[in-house]
Amino acid sequence: MASLSAATATAAAAATRLLPSAYTSAASLSYRPSVSLGSLRSSPLLSRIFLPQNSARRLSTGRIGYSTASPPKCAASDPEQLKSAREDIKELLKTKFCHPIMVRLGWHDAGTYNKNIEEWPQRGGANGSLRFEIELKHGANAGLVNALKLLQPIRDKYSNVTYADLFQLASATAIEVDPFFWTSGSEAGGPKIPMKYGRVDVSGPEQCPEEGRLPDAGPPSPASHLRDVFYRMGLNDKEIVALSGAHTLGRSRPDRSGWGKPETKYTKDGPGAPGGQSWTAQWLKFDNSYFKDIKERRDEDLLVLPTDAVLFEDPSFKEYSEKYAADQDAFFKDYAEAHAKLSNLGAKFDPAEGFSLDDIPSKGQPEKFVAAKYSTGKRELSDAMKQKIRAEYEGFGGSPDKPLQSNYFLNIMIVVAVLALLSSLIVN
Ligand code: HEM
Image 1: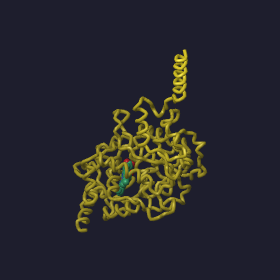
Image 2: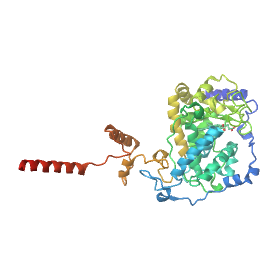
Image 3: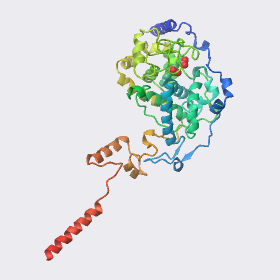
Image 4: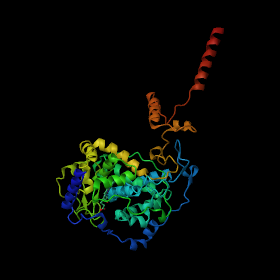
């Protein structure tokens, strides 16, 4: 206990050094959004943003109109629209470099989950409630209205996609896509997140969670605070550390959260809106540099919040932080699992088991796995089984996408013809 207090005191001291004007108690952090919500509410865009969604958007399989082995019977979001929305999100990321704020948006929608409350939506979680003004005004959500404004045109284009799915789709896509893919040609972004979709939206602001469910950056005892908050979500120490690694992306801005420097050598020129203090030098690239930088603390221009510092001070957290600093693959694996789990917290899925976008063929493209059609009424084939069947087809030069013509009748005809020929020869 004594060593814990010493550790947190060190963390606090480090933060005071890095953030001279900002290390105050969480309660005294001022919420100063860069845009006034009151004035935005009258704008046509924002009044649409804050409107409850049309709740009667249930789709039958027939209306969805995509062809797949086992289409969801009824979906909160139209899978085909969701897939198209993903392409639009990639375009948005490419032009705005808004990867970090999309990840934060998804996390703050999901992170209100309370595993001790059974009822939906009172339990909070990934249910799209963060689109409502009342929740956007929570101190922890300062600045996230900007993420919503970026996504709203995509939501308007694909009205059969729920906000809950759109937020999580934007977040997962931002992790996976390399921000410099278009210039570097490298595809190495973050890990692929095993996402599922079909989250139902809450319908009105009265269903938003109360303020105070998300973590503070500078609580008196960071380790126990993190455990209080993340254990309430049903997450464990490994997941706390892995998820904190998302701070490899993005910046903290004093005019939003109260933390960080107004600008540093890494942020003064953007990309995207300049300013803020990042945790890493390449703050748009998803890798394990967050853990390396927190461990080394060599650069005054890089941010270390008290809740970041404690990841190398608490013995249980430290075990994972050390591992992730040394081994990026281990970080990617644990991060991908933890991110997927976070994105499902508290969500109500329709269909109940959710659906994966990997199973939905793109518009205008041939159906990927024809053989699976014949499993109608049976259990969906697992990906491993599909791969096995595909390998067997390909082993003899075929493809499950284009099954070989059956030669059964042709073979019988040939045998009959040969027999007839033989018997006529014998008779003659
Ligand atoms: C462990 C507890 C956490 C605390 C105390 C915390 C705190 C903060 C703070 C203070 C900021 C700066 C916000 C601003 O000024 O704009 C921030 C940004 C951010 N957080 Fe966290 N965070 C935590 C966990 C997480 C998790 C679990 C994720 C994602 C899985 C995450 C993702 C991000 C991202 C990507 C940003 C950058 C946003 C931007 O650049 O606009 N954080 N966080």
